[in-house]
Image (tube, rainbow, N blue to C red; front, side):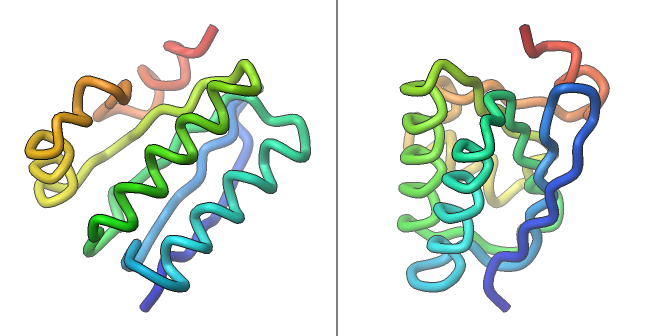
Amino acid sequence: MSAKLSPRQVGDVIVVDVSGRITLGEGSSNLREGIRGLLTQGNKKILLNLGEVSYIDSSGIGELVSGFTSVANQGGQLKLLNLTKRVRDLLQITKLYTVFEVYDEEATAIRSFV
């Protein structure tokens, strides 16, 4: 099953609950279009909840980086929440763990936005 995105608003932060697989093809394009759509609507504070992501491949990681860059270029912030062990390990292997702000608690993550 490819990635499914369910955005919800908490204050001025958009929390996107992502579930399924973020892989080459439909999964990563869903993520790309979802982030692009949020930016088009003027949302600059985006928190991706990856707790229900069962699998992510290199193209999925690429989409996370691309989304992060797109949001930053528009003066916004994209942060990650609830990484599974697999996603956390992949981000550490690729040295991207230091690029993203990663949180385990939604309330803490939401307070971190300025």
